[in-house]
Structures are given as C-alpha cells and as structure tokens.
Length: 280
Image (cartoon, rainbow, N blue to C red; front, top):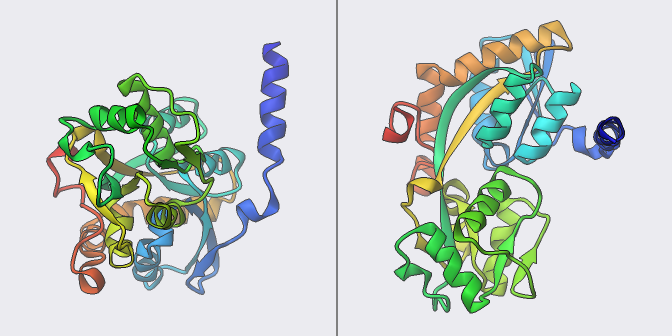
C-alpha cells in the first residue's frame, strides 16, 4: 500500500501541465540561465528588481516560473527549477531534512491581513485574535474567499481554521484556485472576506473600493519568506542560484527588498531581515 501511494505521488508530480514550468518572464541576457519558482514576489515585481541588479554583475538570465509555494517546492523537488522563493516554513524544513533542497535562507517578510467589506457583517474588527476573527466569519456564515491552491497563503489559512476549531464548508466558503491578486479582486467584487498578504494589499488597495483591512497584528500573521535551491541538476545554474540567494541576503539585496514599493505606492511591500523583531 505504501509503495503504491509513493508511486501514485510520483506520477502526479510528473503529470504537472507543461505551462507549470514555462517562464512567466525572463530577466537578463547572460549565458547562464537559472529557473526560479515563486508567486507574489514575481507577480508584484520584486523579483525583477532583484534580478536586474544581480544580472548586471553576473553572466546570468533568470527565468521566473509563476507558482505558489506548494507547487514551487514540487517543481524544485522534480528538478524543474533550480531554486524557489517561498513562504511555507514547515514544508521548506522538510525539503531540507529530506535532502532534496539546500541553502534555505531567510530573505524577508510581510504579513497577512484579513480584509473584508467595509460594513464588516461578521464584526471581525472586534476580535481579539485572528482565530477569533475566523470563528466570527464561520459563525455568521459571511462570505469568505480562499485560494484553495496549497500555496503558502492557503496553508496559513488552513492552519488558522484549525486553531479556530472550525471546518470551512458551505456556500459561504468559496474556493477560487487563483493567485493572490486575482482572489483579492474577486473579494472586492463579491464583498467577501479574504486573507491577503500586505504586499499585494499595498499594490492593489487603490482599486479596492469595497474592502478595508479589518484585522491585522496577530503574531501568527507574520509571513516569512525563504529562498532555497536544489541539489541536483545543471551545475552552472545551481551555482548561479547559490550566488543569487546570497545576493538577496546581502546589504544590496536587502536594501532593494526593504525599499521596494515606496516610490510607486508610498509604502514598502516587504520587511528586510534586520528590520523586524520577528526575525531576531
């Protein structure tokens, strides 16, 4: 039975659609191409900013494969990408422990916000903790949108439902199978609750007239990002991936990360590793 389950799991991984490994964007014109899987950091432009500075002093070209944390780690395990930038700490640690990923490095963080309709029908703004806020949503059957995609956001959401001792199900709970930005826009259109990361909120808030941040600040909502790379594959690509991870953690890389978003939106999207007590 165990052998059959393992075989089935490998078949499922191998059956990922071709588009799952296509470059959403490519940065640089260097000789050595390395592939990086991530979600929001790519979607919001941080990856481009980091890659542009890195490629200026390296003979490299970065292929961004757009994927949530769960899929990013699956792609890394298969050797479909050289590195990943993800926010799923437990899964990341397992990857290193199992020996198919290495060089796990904290690169920064943001936080999660529970956003929802300005009328706040579930009264989550009165909650004393995020698990109480989730209980209020469930008890009132207020519309809640979930990505439902095994991303880092989805993993965090399901962990909080567990802490709240609630099983999200029924017409009030809608799964989108979409990325952060798309689901946030749907929450605005449908006037539902959604747990978004603060970075996407900063980028989108001017277009979200029906929503507001209703709960934030619980330590559980800190959202740490780590980079890690594979151990087998193209030697040159893995070496460039190693150097890129070191670059993101360097003073130059951290300055780019910590300031990203300020010029365009007036607020930084990410917190550097030396700027948050949660990192110490």
